[in-house]
Structure formats: C-alpha cells, structure tokens
Image (tube, rainbow, N blue to C red):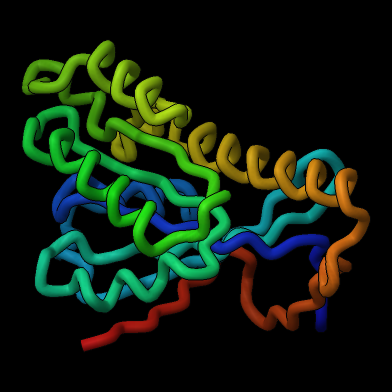
Length: 206
C-alpha cells in the first residue's frame, strides 16, 4: 500500500575506508552492530523514515566506498545530495587529516548549499585515541559545520548525528520556502513502499 511522505532527503556518508561508515548506517537504520563488515564495494544505501516537527521525512542514506579506486564512482553521488556526513576514526590520525580532502571533494562535486555534519567515530575506544575531541571540534568550527563524537558499537550519538543533519536540511528548506514561496515540485513526495521502513536496498557498482 502506497504511503505519502512529506519530504525525501538524500544523505551521503563519506570518509576513509575503515572509519565505520557502514556500521554507523546500520546502527541508525537497523539499530544493530556487526563486527564482520567488509569494505563497501562501490555504493550501498538504506532507507529509514523519521518524523520531525510533525513531518514524515524519508531518509535515503548512501554509504560510499572510501578506497581511492572507487573515488570516480562515488563522486557522481555527490550531485543531488542534500546532506553529507563526514566520518573519521578517532583512533586513526590519517583518517582525521583526510577530512580536509573530503571537504574539498564536497566543494568540487556537491551543491553549494549542501548541509554538512562531521562525526568522529569509535569514541568507545578511548584507550586507542589518536585524535582529541578538541581537535575535532576545532576543525568543525574552522569549516563552520556541526560535530559529534560517535560510537556505532555503543550507540553513542548516532541517532543524534543523523537527525541533526535532517533538521538542518528541514530548516534550510523552510527558509527557502519563506523567502521565495513553494518551489516547483516542492510539494509532497509520494513513494510506493512495499517493504519495512528500515529495509535494505543494495546498488553495487563495479
């Protein structure tokens, strides 16, 4: 039976391979954690519907491969993204340093008004920490984006990260509508849904 959704948001997870993007996605969409994930090949995505401020928001969340050889595939998915989550691993200095490179990719390939969020993942592994929370906060301030430390394993701040980004997108859309009136095609989005709202969709590109 077809359901009506008020908005459909396309979100993108980016960051180096192994920082926990897939684990974050599974924690948010399935409330599950699996230690046996292999590196994402190409692109995967999952869908979850949430309610924000009385509106039903369908989140289409794309999980991109972090390896260099898949970079040309994933750049195509920046286009049309309304929100992008940058992820690094607090136990991996290089993944943090590379956040600047990922931000350059966003500037090159995504729309200028895309909403961004930065997550320092694996904060449950504090004994192996290489990147302080203060450094993460400073980098986020430098780029004017929001920041949280997360743990997909311990379910720390995962829900908050995704929902904060969704709210920021909602706020931007509301401002646009207030400034210029309803945009063309900006009404309700009707999507036929034949699975549970947390079902997995897989689109693997080689």
